[in-house]
Image (cartoon, rainbow, N blue to C red):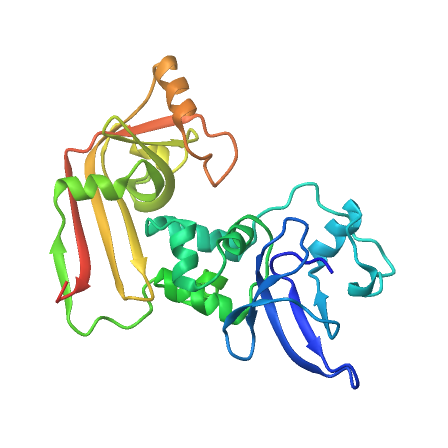
Length: 307
């Protein structure tokens, strides 16, 4: 018997074949996937160390089935009948959407995998698997992770991603306070996605999102000639970043105002490209760098009144 993190352990009645208990394998004790296993039982949500008996078998995920077969680790007794068509194994396994959201939320809160796993009462190895592979965790696991990260299962699953943020209820006693310059700079961090407010060539106002970097106290972003963000060059603009915590009905925003200009020095452009954390999400050839030198940076934060 061999298993991978995320597989299910099923215990059946030897006489009737009726499932008596099942659970998600959230911890392995041997690199080759042999017992024992840490199992989160679906009926109690408890995690126990299990040495499977003859009445137990493994339900593998499709990904694990293919991977084991490729490496010669398949246990025939544990496998379902092969499908009529062979599905190609991807060369590179990308993290699933849920895993990416868990990882982003964990880093945003400054938590290590070990601390997050401890809070959620799951194995750190399983959390690594969840963040790095295409996994389908149980509802119980998602509930535990959401509680550990101070968010919701809905947010981790990505439901409502096409809706504007902030549709939850307001706090009973909210407090809106000003942020100091140092905290504003910390929240701007080194890079991310922000919004730039410009006046377009036809005189109309526009606000557009851009991937940005913070380099030597300047806010810089890449765009293409003639685009709406490129209209910022040679004018004074406003640049805003924010974060909304839907689960807790709180959030913050930072606003930077200052003149914008095109970076013209070839050496400076090469250095900006070298230090960039990400490529522009919009894609395409975007080799015009625009720099904003803030003359004023302000921010606001909404929290409960007792914090």
